[in-house]
Length: 321
Image 1 (cartoon, rainbow, N blue to C red):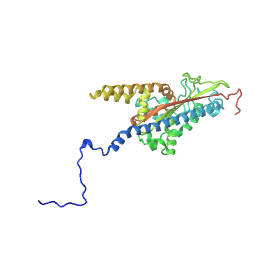
Image 2: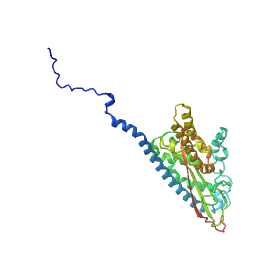
Image 3: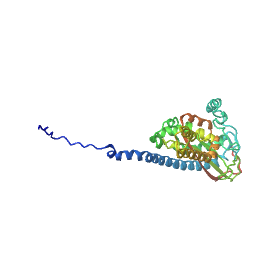
Image 4: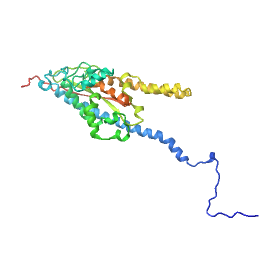
């Protein structure tokens, strides 16, 4: 019998059934675990940014309060001859933003009356004018630190841009555009109150509330933790409702999947209900209609509010011109 010569150096192969093959198990487990862990990581970043932004809004309220108690009784000629200790002044004149407001009104996205250089309301009782504009500017300056960049507003999402990006671009966008629609300064009659006032007496406590539309920039999780501008304005959770419709119309969804989608809608609705007072106050921003420009890009936001109280620095004397 002829024997085949042995081939040196060739490994002996062993066939293993696919069911018993455990190679790559660690890699599969990593893929399964990675997505929820990564989402949790992104959620922690977004939550930390919200917390930091809330601190900045609190600082902005303190700054606006300090400005208010000085500006209210300042010399009339500095503020277009508006009455002392009153926020019910005249308008601040025409602004280049008026043309933008007219375009938005024509498109049915807002009222041109809310888009102006300094005459838009700053409180639900008709606060307006140059004194309010000065107080709003004091509140806006600290908020430049958390303003989004223009590319973020137009839909560019990345963790790098969310954490920092280009600080100069963020500050420039906030000063020139974003803070005009995202910052509202109102004057409640008492802390936590829903009624507002425009006139003050000497040494009367002045409560200033700053409401800020914070842009949620962290990808993926901003769809879960924040809402688009249309949902905020209407109180209808559009994304969650669309997800529920997709689940129910598939015809293959289980009862648990449908229940989870319903819970998601309810959670989003509760979040929008809590944001409703702040959304109403944002109508008193300098140019509230500009926020609708972010609707087409799907940007997500959350409303942050803070307030501070200080005694008015008024005194019964007349200024010498």
